Image 1 (cartoon, rainbow, N blue to C red):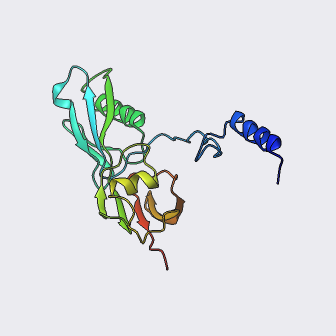
Image 2: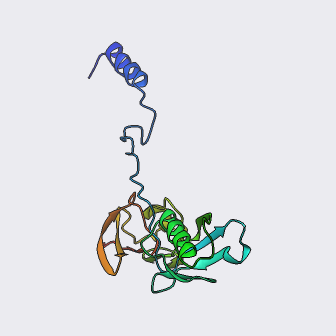
Length: 187
């Protein structure tokens, strides 16, 4: 047992060191590695061609990975970033000899959905939001059930035509089209 004056010195030292409460000793999260988002089947984009109302609108990337533009036809979109699609649409408009120097902007209006399965209160399909993690996907699906393993999840992710499956931590980022499964805890 420490003498009273030593105990007081230790407690004062801990308070001065910033012992603020739960979570204070956790390390800072590293900055996320945000890669340019690649379009895929099911994404919806808004294409704005300045000065040309008939070429401005919302388009969905079809199962073949393309969008159908009026006066131009099919333009491949899957695998491209929004900047890449801007260039592809500009090239298509120039090749069709409709415009010499078109000004095109592309923005994503709706991402492919995610699917949350297993031990959540409301399993199902949900809209993806940029920056979603496993735990925020679970929150959207009504939270964990009392039987859920809360430390990790299973994710099936399709990149191109190849699905891959793996374990993900609560803080792992979810991508559009992912199927997240929360396992049941064994008692």
